[in-house]
Length: 153
Image (cartoon, rainbow, N blue to C red; front, side, top):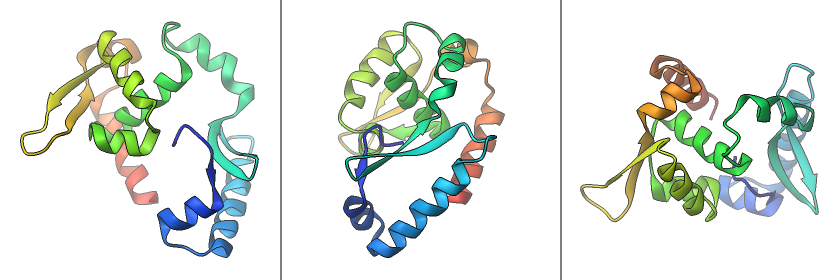
């Protein structure tokens, strides 16, 4: 979900795991996501890895989504949707510094809300009513996805 490829070394540092464990995890994830029923895949380029939507689904997804949102903005929006409420600083850690531009665009298009954190320098990012109207997704459904995602981590 990072939005840019990540090296095994970086994965090792982030997870406090040795390279052999990282290799095993990557093999396991590639096997898991290679199934025809999976919508995502692990891609490798220049010794870096990223989790992406299967390229065969790009046209299908683009037809379903608002045409004025870029894929990178949609990925940032999906991250916010899964978390339901996230600190901007945490979102930047997950999606990279390009997410600052995504946040601005998503705010301009009224898909998200941004509120100052009471104690701290960051902002809370959450979904707007327009998001729920546009994507026809309920809070209950997002809660199920979020709880499933948290159990897998």
